[in-house]
Length: 405
Image (cartoon, rainbow, N blue to C red; front, side, top):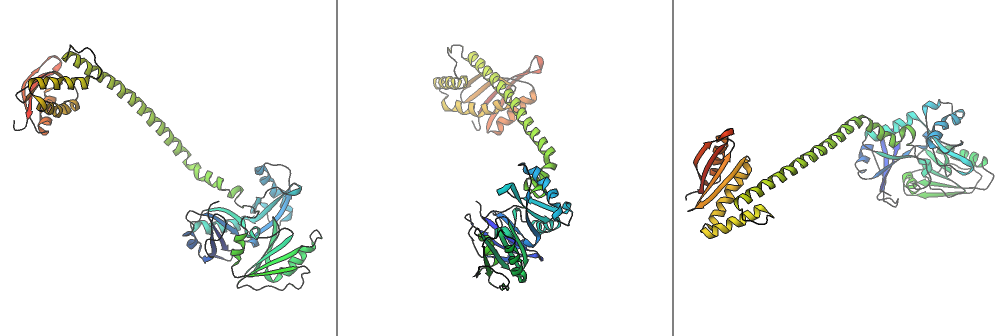
């Protein structure tokens, strides 16, 4: 269970509310705070927000309907209960609880206008409400006991797991007496919690065993202790969070589909590019092997022509005394020649610190660019010869040596 922010809006003042943070075990992580919904929002980060619907706005009842499909049951409940209400059922919101003994279902009924007003206050303040439950169903109450909590001038009463009512505190005795008379005839005790700052109303008319508990906390402290008891979430049907997500998702479906198509096409193009590059790499390796065999026809086994050619060249330079100078020139110029592309090396020789390369390039412009790039690398470059052959390709010899040689 996530840590929770339990918030109770003031039904008579949209700018006022009380809240308390609860840890993962449902215990208060601090004291009850009061202020505006916006101030509560600053403490809601990362917490599951549970809001309490005022009991004076909720009617708790039961209905007997056959079936198990909750969606169908929710559609049928308003018409099964419409005779109990003077309002048009189209103006009422019905929230269905779990099935109880006898196949009946507990139901909470709230005017849609009151639901919208409460949720608007909370959402405008930036609160994302995860659960909305009647405050009546959070009163901690043992079995076979009627429990009441005095909250200012209102008394909240829980008479069963899914039953209860709210009444003006001064009329609590009369309503409790009527409730007990309509019961099953068994003896039931009454437990009344009186938070600090509230007054116990007169209970002279109540003929029952009454236990009064005074507490230094607020009514919200008491309700927080019963948050884990059986309850009914009002965020059902038109107020379902899944439906809200569906509404938010609907305008983005086409965009998401296009994005997914784009991702698929991108991966497809990358796959084609990969296969093309792989083919080019195979062709390049084949050309390197061909050049190696032409340069060293006595080589019996070709495993890695680039490495073998480097080894052969190093061996030749050691024999001719060129040593590291030749390797340095070859490495510095080789990077440029490899990057240039469309350059064929047909011969190479090294004497007296000078590297002579016989090349075939696509044009004189490319040859000139090669010279400039090599010079930018700190090499002295001289074009010894340049002859245009058939197909406009240019056969040339470059003399390369270290700067200052």
